[in-house]
Length: 280
Image (cartoon, rainbow, N blue to C red; front, side):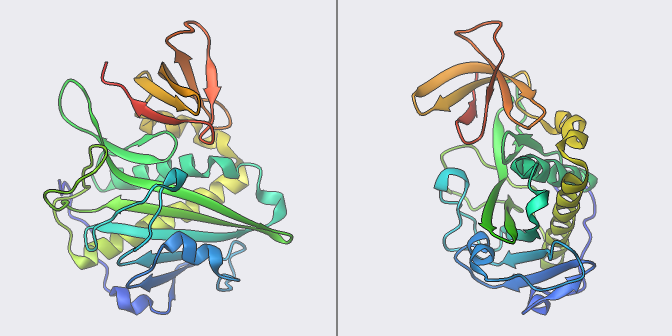
């Protein structure tokens, strides 16, 4: 699963303590945190820079309280995973398309990994997956994205958390769904280079979204949408319903056709439901 020679970075994680600039992005490393998202959310301010968003890419060697969507624990094996978050300060007039950030993050990360020869798809709204060989096309999760906002009178702080299974997972790991890794093995310099690359493409994605809106990402989503045309189970608070996923609308909500309402196109949001592929 190491299809192309991966770049290596000349610096070490400890060179990012307390932090340093990589281009326009302020980068920090911490050996251990409860959560990179929580750390950026609770900071009173982000380091000042010439960039209008004051972006910070915070990486951690280990997380003790990582979280996924809906508060689920995100368990990452130290040394085997990327755990990092991008923090940005947004002015009040730049919030119109923020709800689409998880989709944009998935798109740009999948596209970046494709340049390294790794085929990754996105399961709406925020999971990164590989399609396992075989007729059932089973999805194995390789990563996830968690976006959070902290609103204040002078603007809002956007935090995008990213967890990726970088290399082979320990045997006997118990999970509630199939999981996979991006690579067989990665050296420390390779892992750091990949982590910095993910931070840079996330920032570029946020910049483009704020400048041009979500519409410019619609065609790109179609290339990474692993649910399109698949039978899925839509989990509502009222219970599950079977459906077929039919892409997204202009705002990034999922379009489905329920099995018990053929011919009717329904729209669901990430706040309303969770989605699991069906085997049939």
